[in-house]
Length: 285
Ligand code: HEC
Ligand code: HEC
Ligand code: HEC
Ligand code: HEC
Ligand code: HEC
Ligand code: HEC
Ligand code: HEC
Ligand code: HEC
Ligand code: HEC
Ligand code: HEC
Ligand code: HEC
Ligand code: HEC
Image (cartoon, rainbow, N blue to C red; front, side, top):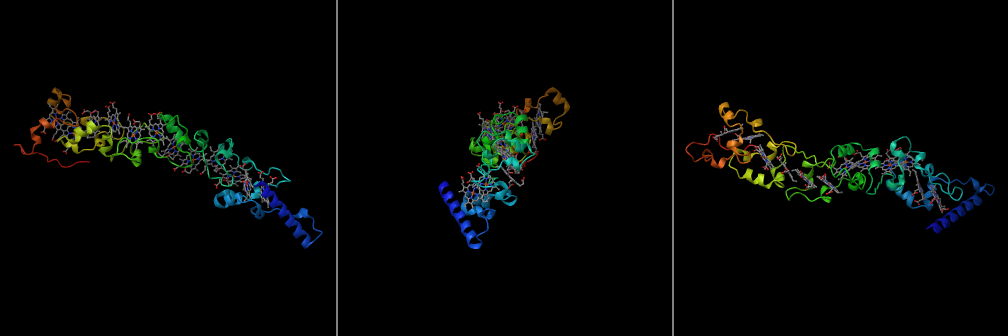
């Protein structure tokens, strides 16, 4: 490769010399100047890379803004990034070419899997969450998950789902990557998802004849995992004060919210003497 370049250079210089003698014998060869248009005659890779993905290194600067002079007169015409990039914390990082692996395609960025601090020169909210909500993700490097700049990994790349009812796009219903143990969810989260871990509660509730069976888990356990509601949040003064004074706990008669003891409650059967006062209209799903 190098030999070929040298041969090219020699023949190009020969060409300059030939043109020189052909036009005017008394013009000194020293007047021949190298222009940006000349580079492609001998160099393939750099002009091609810049043409394809040069970004602002294509539009805002030229080859010779960066490469001042040329071998053999200038031995190593390689610029320092700091010649042009100064004044931001990002420009104080070590090893620019470690991430911007090719200066001719400056926005093609690859990372090793052990990078965190350099990311923080531009992104700050994620580290704040990771530190505020300590989890096992806090100890991971940013690039352990984001190994190509801008790429968002699937959770299922590293984790198994809780059940067949939960797929990759559902993870964010309950989790955020930078605070994964702070489980929150919206009011439309299907009960099937909770059933992945709470099979007993799910089965008890959906097989109960009581009206609670029509309610979604998250209708009662709102927003944040492990929230447990008070019955009286929804049922204000369900019974006369005298009864409540005698039996202060709802559970003494209604057992737990998921079954309400309806199996022993004759009025639940529509065929019984007393007609069902309120037919079980489907409430929230
Ligand atoms: C006539 C052929 C020719 C032209 C035209 C030419 N180069 Fe070169 N260039 C070479 C050769 C051959 C070398 C290797 C020289 C050496 O290693 O001593 C080289 C080396 C270089 C290097 C140094 C590479 C290194 O590894 O240190 C840079 C940078 C470079 N050229 C940039 C340019 C730029 C920019 C242009 C256009 C303005 C250009 N060249 C035009 C033939 C050419
Ligand atoms: C923004 C500055 C910048 C611009 C613009 C730029 N280069 Fe470079 N170039 C560099 C740097 C820095 C290196 C050293 C890369 C390294 O060490 O890996 C380099 C390396 C080179 C090399 C030697 C390594 C190789 O890829 O063969 C050549 C030849 C070269 N450039 C040619 C060019 C040509 C031709 C152009 C214009 C089409 C150009 N460069 C535009 C900064 C630039
Ligand atoms: C001769 C000046 C010069 C040198 C040397 C130089 N750059 Fe640049 N670079 C520029 C200019 C001008 C821009 C466009 C303005 C800006 O974004 O600051 C730019 C833009 C960039 C961009 C953004 C590209 C885009 O398309 O948005 C990156 C990344 C970059 N430079 C990295 C580097 C790295 C890494 C080096 C060293 C290997 C380097 N530059 C060396 C002049 C230079
Ligand atoms: C850890 C990897 C990493 C290192 C090391 C690194 N950069 Fe960057 N750089 C990036 C990423 C990622 C971007 C954002 C690219 C984007 O906007 O898509 C970037 C963007 C840039 C930009 C364009 C945006 C801006 O802030 O102006 C320039 C210029 C730049 N880097 C120059 C440098 C220079 C100079 C160095 C060395 C002093 C350097 N970078 C070191 C990863 C790195
Ligand atoms: C020089 C500044 C800079 C550096 C350094 C940098 N980024 Fe970025 N990053 C950006 C910019 C600019 C964007 C695109 C705009 C946006 O979406 O915020 C971006 C986008 C992203 C995105 C995609 C955002 C989305 O909404 O899709 C991720 C993920 C990301 N960066 C992670 C990282 C990681 C991890 C690192 C360190 C390994 C890093 N960045 C280093 C500037 C930077
Ligand atoms: C690149 C791999 C990777 C990706 C992608 C990833 N994780 Fe993790 N996650 C880990 C590792 C490693 C641990 C620690 C495992 C251990 O030590 O047992 C972990 C732990 C966890 C934990 C337990 C935290 C604790 O402190 O107990 C949760 C919850 C979690 N991940 C959820 C997620 C979710 C949700 C996503 C997607 C938003 C995700 N992870 C994406 C690698 C990953
Ligand atoms: C365990 C894997 C993992 C780690 C570690 C991780 N991220 Fe993320 N990141 C993700 C996932 C997955 C997303 C997509 C949004 C989500 O699920 O919350 C994301 C989203 C992002 C975004 C897009 C905007 C946003 O906040 O949603 C940026 C920027 C980002 N991460 C930067 C970082 C930085 C910087 C670090 C290190 C301080 C980091 N990430 C650590 C997995 C991770
Ligand atoms: C319906 C809510 C919900 C959804 C959807 C969900 N998770 Fe979870 N996940 C949880 C809860 C709650 C915990 C905490 C259990 C505990 O406290 O031990 C958890 C814990 C985890 C853990 C820690 C280890 C473990 O199994 O206990 C990982 C890893 C995890 N989830 C990954 C995922 C992934 C990957 C997805 C998407 C495929 C996902 N989760 C979807 C609620 C959910
Ligand atoms: C990944 C498994 C997992 C998923 C999915 C999950 N949970 Fe849990 N949940 C747990 C674990 C583990 C506990 C703790 C059990 C214990 O302490 O005995 C728990 C505890 C609870 C508790 C009891 C809190 C207390 O103080 O007794 C409630 C209520 C609860 N979960 C509701 C839900 C709801 C609602 C959903 C769906 C939005 C859900 N869970 C999804 C694993 C999960
Ligand atoms: C988040 C609100 C909410 C909470 C908390 C709640 N319930 Fe209910 N409850 C309802 C709704 C809605 C109905 C159905 C009303 C209707 O359809 O007329 C209902 C119905 C009932 C019924 C009638 C059942 C039937 O089949 O006729 C009883 C009894 C009852 N609740 C007791 C309780 C007890 C006891 C608790 C606490 C252990 C409780 N509820 C907690 C919302 C709630
Ligand atoms: C002494 C036993 C007892 C206690 C304690 C008790 N209940 Fe009841 N509750 C009943 C009986 C019996 C019914 C009537 C069942 C029926 O007709 O379906 C009933 C019915 C209800 C109904 C349905 C009313 C309707 O109009 O359909 C609600 C709601 C209710 N109770 C909530 C509560 C709440 C909340 C508490 C605790 C604050 C509580 N109960 C405490 C025995 C009790
Ligand atoms: C009508 C409101 C309501 C609905 C709907 C509901 N819960 Fe509960 N849940 C409660 C209340 C209230 C408690 C506290 C125990 C009690 O007093 O009945 C509780 C307790 C729990 C507990 C802790 C005790 C235990 O049984 O392990 C878990 C876990 C739980 N619920 C999960 C769920 C899941 C999963 C669903 C959906 C399948 C669900 N709940 C639906 C109100 C409800």
